[in-house]
Length: 112
Image 1 (cartoon, rainbow, N blue to C red):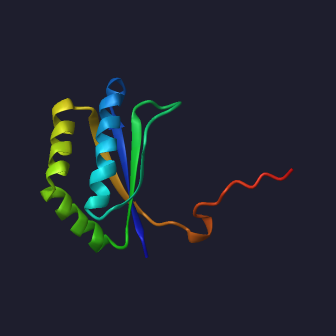
Image 2: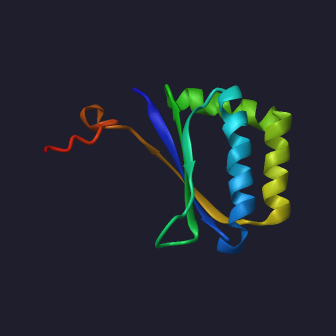
């Protein structure tokens, strides 16, 4: 059973461009370290201080192995340091979720 790590970030809305750079950096790093990156999502309308990252793994054990690879990855280290220096992340929470397969990626079907 696959699991998805849902990372909820509380961000400084005045530093959105720094967070976007941080997210784009992960777009290269996460797949190289073994995560199936579903994407990072930025505020668009409504709440302006919450962003999300979603990464899927084949198991919790695979997530743990990924975290070890990420900690030793040079680009990953640089991205963590960038976030610490710029302080655009106020807090983050991780939840592990699983998809209800019958609902996954259902395309819109507009009846005419």
